[in-house]
Each structure stands twice: as C-alpha cells, then as structure tokens.
Length: 228
Image (cartoon, rainbow, N blue to C red; front, side, top):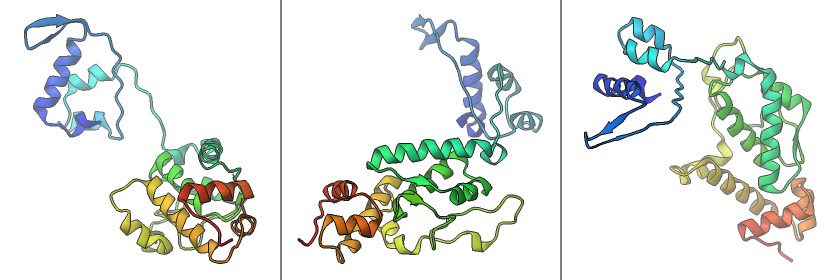
C-alpha cells in the first residue's frame, strides 16, 4: 500500500477523497459522480501504526470497512499443492509440454517457509521446470540452483543463499530484463549444449528427456537445428 509510505499531506488528500466518493469536484469546475470500490492491501500492521502516530486514524477507519486477513503461504501449506498443479499446468501450456512434479519434490515445496509467498513459489517452479531434464520434475532442489529459503522453524544462514552458478553469466548478461527472458536464455543454452552431442531431434528429445515434437518446437522457438 503506497499510502503507508506516502507523506502526511498525501494521506490527508486520500482521506478527503474517501469522504467525497459521491460528489467529487475536480479543480472546482465540475462535479462528477464517483462509483467505485476501493480495495486496499498491505503487509503492515496499520492499527499499530495508528497507535504510533505513523498513520492517520481517520483514513484507517475509512478504508477499514471490511477487513480480510490473508495469511502467509507458510501458514496455509495445504494451498501449496493446488498452486503447484495450477502453475505447472500453465507452464505446460506455455512450453507445449506435459511435465509434472514428483511427490518428493512436492513434499519439499510444502516444507519451505516461502518468505516471498506465492510469487517466490511461482518463480521457483518456473526455474525447476526449465532446468529439469525429464517430464517428471523429481528434484527436491537441483544441484547449485537453490534460492534463498529456510526450513520451517529453522534458522537462516549464509548457506541458504547460494546462486545459480551455471546460469550466473546469463543472469549478468540479462540483468534488467524479466525472469522469462532469463529462463529462455538459460533453456536455449542447455539445448545448444545438448545439440553438440545430438544429430537428430529424436536424439535431442532422448537427451533432454522430452518428447520429439517438444524438441522440434523448442528448436524452432530459438532458431536452432540439429547437425543433420
């Protein structure tokens, strides 16, 4: 919520705006009817901020009409299974594949604390999806590709913050671009390396543990071809 970090005068204007939802006067020239629903979200304790004098109480009580508490992902681990299946389904549609997560990998995902909540879970699955060689994503955490996390009830340590060494050059080169571009670049590099040992799309498919049509689509996507 930007209001939390905005200046006092800005929050005062927000508070005035909330009082004028039925007749809003812009530049004192014309009156417009306003018909909208205001939805706010924050991870701050606004009530405590009000008590500490850091948030306007009048604005707090105006926006706090119907509060809904959404617990962190680590507090609703049963949702992780549903989210994983949905994300993998979306990735299969995106990449034209039929991958799935093994029970062992799923159990591992349920055991994480997910400090970044759903966004971290989604990014982790997308990374696993790309670097997994077969149809079954049967990995608790791929070698050298862990991101920051700590086990439930455990302590964080510097060992929990490794970097993806094999993709470090890709990450440097792609700095400033989105995750999808980085993942595409990483996948292309893996396929290019596999092509050095494969003479046909069938060999490539076997090497990458994917279907032959999927191998063809990936070659077309990145403008690559086999030696033959």
